[in-house]
Amino acid sequence: MSYLAYQPEVWSEASSRGADSIGNASALTDASAVPPVPCLPELVTEHDRCRRILWQFMKPNGRPSFTPGLLRDMTQVLDRVEARFAAAANDRDAGISFLVLASHLPGIFNLGGDLPLFMQAIERQDRERLLWYARICAAGQYRRANGMGLPICTVALVQGDALGGGFEAALAHDVIIAERSASFGLPEVLFNLFPGMGAYSFLVRRVEPARAERMILSGRIWSAEELHELGIVDRLAEDGRGVDAVHAFVHEFERAGPARRALLRARRIVNPVGLQELTQIAELWAEAALELKTADLRRMRHLARAQDKRCSLQNGHA
Image (cartoon, rainbow, N blue to C red):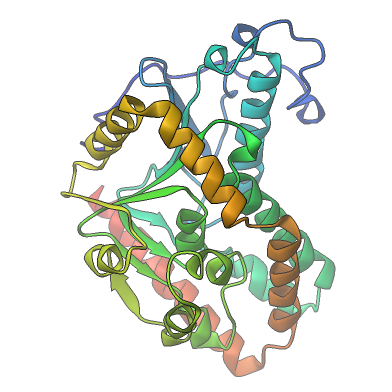
């Protein structure tokens, strides 16, 4: 089932409050007063009340990467979810048990970091701009990896290409469900950089460190089936049936809900992903980016153009 074919209740209420009020539940008396999210320009959200799923479909302006606008909207969603739980009399009243991240664009989950932003910041040696981007990403990855300390299971539904930061974003979730034609890769090594938004932290919690390093340094593309065999992708779905696979997972999860939620908490206790760890690595990425040479930037620019061409062709067939 495609995104367009799946249309449960759409939250269309635009937020009338300023961004600084997002996440502030002090004036709220119950969770029903807090819709899960306002209408956002770069993230389509849908609340499936019956299954208690909050869907997030990435729709960045321009190239399908983690633009500043998409990062802003993803942060607002997490802020609003926290506010909803804070206002609820109990966890069930919050109405959300699953956060699912997917893409609005057929064939592409997310192509990763905002390469034009990176190139401009590197050419200008704008350390603060790169550090800002890195820290925003690290904070978001931390919140998703830890479910914000809430009784929520996070799910990434990958239908298409998940490259660089797109792959890293998927890795931050409790569960990765991928359609068989989906592909994954960490191309940063091609321009003498490394994936700094959690790839190493999350991979070594799914595979042995030596394999994680080989994957990062290979620069190759991995199929969903290959990563499923390695235990990185949790479930495979037939092409076009990703949403159905999420529904099936939720149904199975809820059959033993208390036990599954307790097991998620135990996993996070035994194998925690710390904000300091993610931030330090992201800052290391920013410093490494500032050391890139002209030839490295040329390769980065070539990759950006190739991705733009791919997106144009994709939009032409949409």
